[in-house]
Length: 72
Image 1 (cartoon, rainbow, N blue to C red):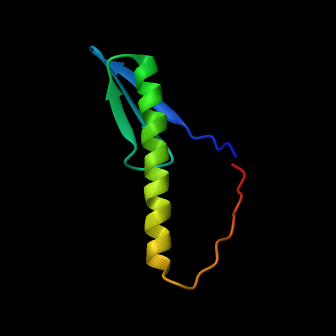
Image 2 (tube, rainbow, N blue to C red):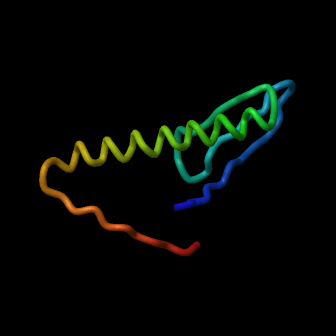
């Protein structure tokens, strides 16, 4: 399954800065544009997995997972 997120990217001096609009805390900086894009992908995947594991831990033993789709 592919889900798209929006990266906000800008260059300041010799650094490329970026963050994911939809997920607070996913932000990175790198020396090149390509490195930044790759680091953002890795960081986004890690953040989503951490959030998923945290949510399941907090749910305890009896829970149901349900997919929810939205259009924006």
